[in-house]
Image (cartoon, rainbow, N blue to C red; front, side, top):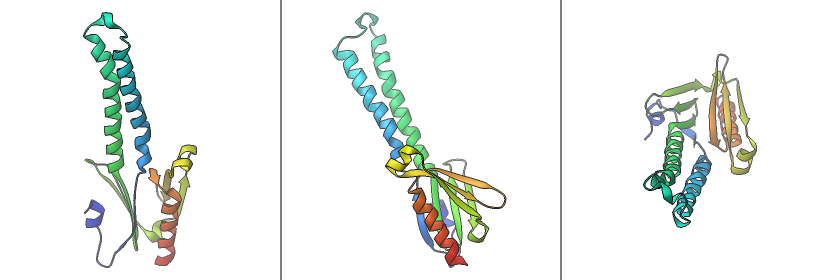
Length: 159
């Protein structure tokens, strides 16, 4: 049960839930694979043998960077959750320090999507939720047009 599930009030039901796309891991995994190949070639071909123990640090550093990138992507994936209910749109951003957006459906003035080139290929993009006073962006969400449609459907059914 997530934080947003605990914020539901009596008579409120979840219509739709979305997280970031799993494609955010793609570039980190490529970096890690490239680093592992680099380290393998580094030792197999005997590059920089004259450096002694420093060779190990040179070979392992790209692997550590790849692992850190994957850790950052996992945190990024877990930190964003969007929930559409029959009464409101709720967005949670963050793990430790949370930002929780809680907008009643009658306060949403517009929902806009932006899908970059690779987002169109892999099914992710940015959903911007507008009210009279603010704009809230949800980056790299899976199926941004589907999210936009679900929010618009909820607004229409709440009228």
